[in-house]
Length: 128
Image 1 (cartoon, helix red, strand yellow):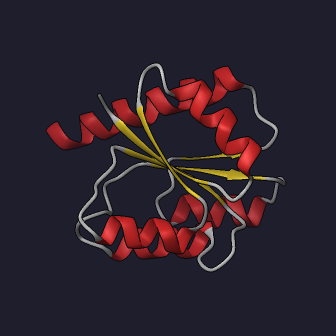
Image 2 (cartoon, rainbow, N blue to C red; image 1 turned 180 degrees about the horizontal axis):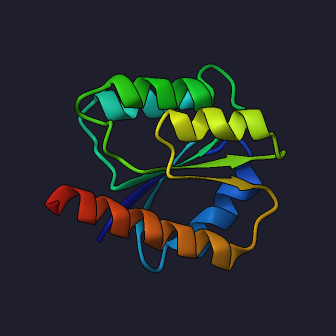
């Protein structure tokens, strides 16, 4: 079963994301970027990361920067969740390697579709 790391500081949204994904994926929840980075640094490698943009201690942009410069984690697809549409932030995230940028609130089916697309693209990248 594919492992999805969810990094989100909004507890009700964490609950919702887990409910949406748990039937098809192993879901690991972290409440801030620093906690997630520590978990990753301990040798855990998820198949996909879903991250909030604005978080305490290590935000989504900083996390993307760390992932993109890391040899071990740079190929993990990342879906960024943001509470607001910001063209500049979207461009920054995509330039740093984010697979996509979704604005909250989002349709659960849209998230599921993007998760499948990201995992499929990641698999193709591995074998190309």
